[in-house]
Length: 364
Image (tube, rainbow, N blue to C red):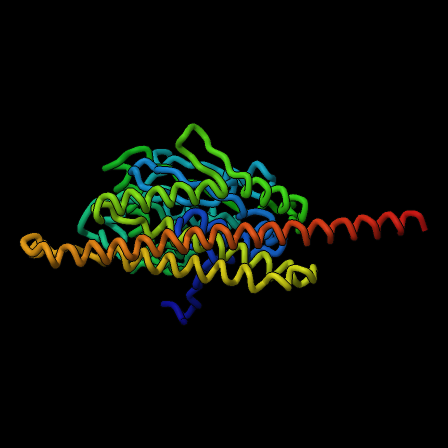
């Protein structure tokens, strides 16, 4: 549009390529996955990685079920990503917007590890409560920063006023201290191709499972922990709320497994024959997730404490749901193991055929 004085107003905008990934539960994992799946040079990481998982308690004593070896630092060590760390106390507030824009102009995504959501309008804590959280920036225009963040229970790509981001950063510095953030971009020389040997190795690690320090459980061992959580919940008569994050992340792990099988099945004919088996595992994972939501909706009204018969009905319904979750979880574990063993055999045969073909060509 024409500017005052007859010139043209210049509209500045820079948006880096990203999309909502199949694993949405934990924002940082989702952000990096959304970056990788939109970069054709390293898209193969979606299939080579995101195989093994761990379950542990975080600093809030909440269970976290996460992919392993897919943090920004892991990708830096692999030579895929470049990172820089910045401390807010080294950046003056009046220059912070330009500082963030400069990083984005250099094709850097910004991982804002800790902000104060009191200043963020998409948050339920907006002008209500000082709340420490994270957000992730992938672009800007003259008025807003584009972020990937949760709002209304869903992970979204949206615009946030620049002043909200700046205030949330400096508010965090004031109320919580030690505010820092990180830039991340895919290294310009990074190239990833499908590594079937690496995939088989990761699946083997997942199937073996192991424990670190009696606190962090990996691979199939995670199923044991989840079953224990279900038992604790049942013993407490619903006094412990099931973490929907754990069960959604569990389902998302199976979704990524499914995506890998369907993609590799385009090249490896045998994998097409087991598409239906991993499809079933994914459906079971979704069913379990929906049951945990149903379980958490079972609230016992205070008025029912004087009516034992009503309370008994609620507890029986709770037990019924927890028993179904436990049953489906065991079925999913067994079905997943059968599928993965078939996957390994099919890929091993494919690799041996490839090697034999190579040996024949060498002899010629």
